[in-house]
Image (cartoon, rainbow, N blue to C red; front, side, top):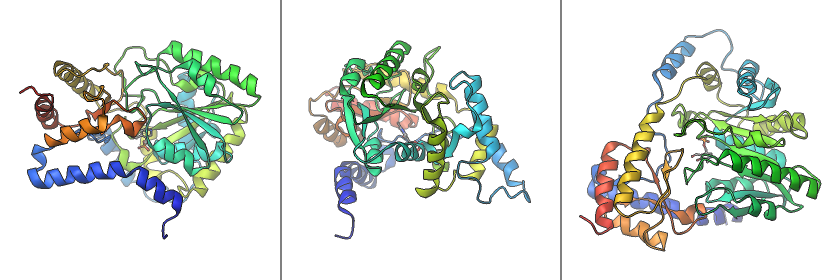
Length: 393
Ligand code: PLP
């Protein structure tokens, strides 16, 4: 076999995504793009803010400074220092210095260097289901074993279940809040309890359990006074961030991993992140983007654009008889599938040219995911089409 068995098997497991994609493309060919309502994409719809383009213009004029050469694998020192100062100032990681920040190729790059740095073969990584399906591949990339723990009916962390799942091989826990696919922002009380349970489990098993907070939706939160990132609530923690969503620059691939200065082996971990950034082939995060985001630390796309769409779709879906909780963040909705078999419902929706992702793909059958990072035509046409799917015209 030309392709390695592990890759072949992973591609086969992930093939439903490709099939959905192909089916969508076929519907577009048959009916025209304006008659297909695609809610599957986790792609930021908005253009980046004007300040981003201004900044790129300025950076394009800077010549003779060697800005586009190789650089330290962790990124420009002044960029790392600026991010550390901000995270320290926001009391996310008090005392953080630039040495504890590694610039990455988005959150995906950040998750991969974090897992590569932490995992020995056979180490277990706990994820909270439903979860971003790529975690399974990232953990496998680095010899880890994925252990899923179900969240509660309202998608909150079941802290008791996490504690019960921790064993001698547990090395890390991934927390993604607000969450893809549910949009759930874990409450402060939950995060405090989780931090307490992790500290207690560490005493029991006798080694650190690293909480990896995967936070690419941090700015896409629609509640007042949200809790800080989950990484704040546990000493042994890493914060993975990306500007893909907050600046709508997913194609430009820029993010960071920050190591909690209170973490066991913080310095060694930062060294591991730097080394794996190099050896996994990222080498360093894109130079121009590092400089751009440092100047745009206060910039963001208009979050209200997403909030308005969330409100509209939540109300419309409830009207149609969908059961769902209004998410506090991200640009996803995760209603219960009207048919017990979510894949069957997704196929039924396809007949009306509505594209959804089955919850099965995120480890929670019986639900479907819709992205509302879509244009008005998709929302208007999609609601009308879903009304037909639900038997109401
Ligand atoms: N983590 C989660 C939960 C995501 O939903 C995504 C992208 O959709 C990523 C990580 C990867 O994001 P990035 O573009 O920053 O690599």
